[in-house]
Length: 281
Image (tube, rainbow, N blue to C red; front, side, top):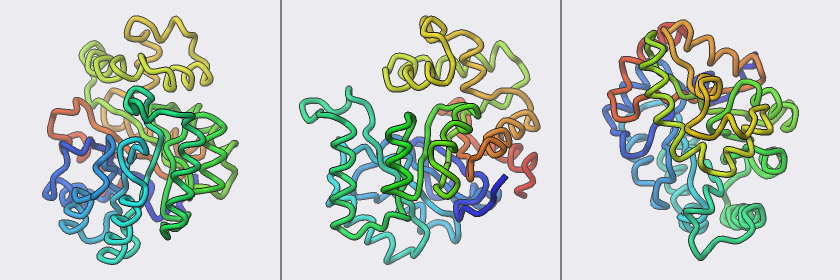
């Protein structure tokens, strides 16, 4: 397992609406290296700025800015502002998101992403300070060529192993992993299934990636089989959850971003128990 990433071995992924400065400070105290702002924050990146202001060392990353929703020039201006105020502590994650979110602006997503990166280049956002949301081989390859690396979402350690082979040894690989801290299998699966079935198992990019990973199409229907749910959301005690994160690391991840479920709950009990199991604090 490598430990060369400035992001640290483990971080926290959370929806933007559930992130607050005091929570960011608490996550930093637990020993996590990076805080990922999920679900396409606005181009002004004001939330990232507030989180950086409330902390001292943790890196704040976007996981990810949706290219259909945020103008590339505006994002670049926000990046420059954050870099000036908090040198080296902000990582820009961008991605094509879902066609359903693009509306009448939708066109070929790969071409649109390349054009977005071209603007970031012109506007002075360094290649090594951005990552791409990537699942399939084509965008993973682009992540190695035009960014520091990739931030895959809703994946398994098996995908991490394949992604590392595609990226090569030098690019950053930082997958996200959902967890439920509960040894009640039925209750944990209910929480997990409610989170992944809608919308993710209904969106073609995630379905296509899961089929590439080895799941049959029928396993993804009707809210997903137990095998699918268990593969996408780790559940159990803190030691078991830590083991799943280490599985990603053993498969080639430089960094793993953990998302505590249910999303509406205070994440600190889960993150605290997991930090202890991982030896972060």
